[in-house]
Length: 82
Image (cartoon, rainbow, N blue to C red; front, side, top):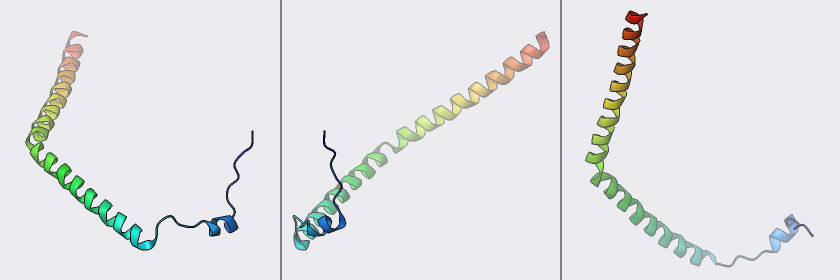
């Protein structure tokens, strides 16, 4: 089993790019446009679900308060019994 060798500096310098600079710029522009659309859609979806997220947040905080209150009440009851 032969291990692959990392290219040396001299070998790296001989590697020719597959794209020229103009092709790379065009592909980057297309990529940026696609990403812009994707992030706009994500922002729209988050805005659509904003009220549901807020309601969920209120419910979670309500549950946290109930759990702490229950623990406090049970502690007081246990102290009176003992």
